[in-house]
Image (cartoon, rainbow, N blue to C red; front, side, top):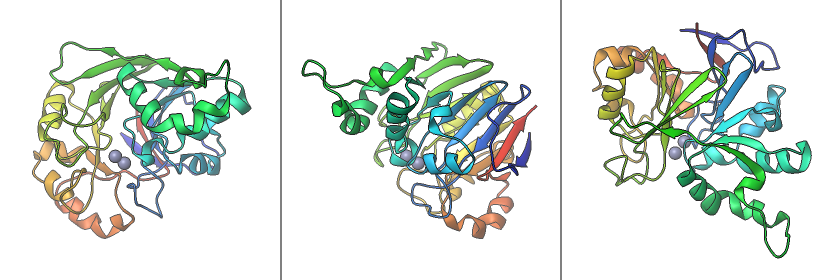
Amino acid sequence: MQSRKNHGKDLELTNEGTLSLFFLGSGSAFAKQLNQNNVLVIKGNRHVMIDCGTKAPMALSRLGLSLAEIDTFLITHSHADHIGGLEEAMLLGRYVAGNKQRMIITAEYQEILWHQSLRGGAEYNEVNNGKGLGFEDFWETLRPRPLAEFARDTREIQIGDINLKIVRTNHFPEQSQTWEQSNYCVGVIIDDRVLFTGDTKYDPEFLETYDRKFKFERIFHDAQFRTGGIHASVEELKHLPKPIKRRMLLMHYPDSWREHTDEVRAAGFRGFAKQGYFYDFP
Ligand SMILES: [Zn+2]
Ligand SMILES: [Zn+2]
């Protein structure tokens, strides 16, 4: 893996065919100096945007891009730092660009995302025969197929040359002990090489089981600097085996992250994933 800063103002959404992750942001839900932890997965002439938080439209705009240019969206869960930009994306698609946006989504999560979050700002922009609009009036849905060989709910989809496996994780509420008890939340395995955990509590069983199978080149992991609540803490992640920590870049952190650089290095982690950087996997 090589990392490089995006120096140009405008971000390129295509490349020669190398798997590349671009961090539009690396901040937690409450970060103010950092954008939210939303990532573009780019390979050849296709790309997938993992999560689209409230700040994503502005973050893209500063890079010369509009939400209407996003090829395909993949949403990990319904917190606003991951879905807050979706209303703009869908209204822009229907009323400005004049086409549906594409989203990788299970039928189960589509129900949750529409009825608990998106419906309020979308359903009654139009009424036909007394009926408002539905999710599929705004979105072309791409369904990942379930994979039987995993103990946890794991699904797969191919977008151009990008292979994505979507794994259920344990994020919220605070009380949930397992992924089955958790509200819908997923991590993403990219090309069987990279694990992007998304938001998750400390879950060594998840990391060790999937790493045994895939031997990830890099693991991008959610991290906070206090223990408790619905995210993994650096203190908890320190207990992971050394070979896992060595390949782990922390993400979804608060504005104070620089104060923890020495601690994170000393604990054996690779470091922090940084906003505005590409992570290339030739
Ligand atoms: Zn989050
Ligand atoms: Zn979250």
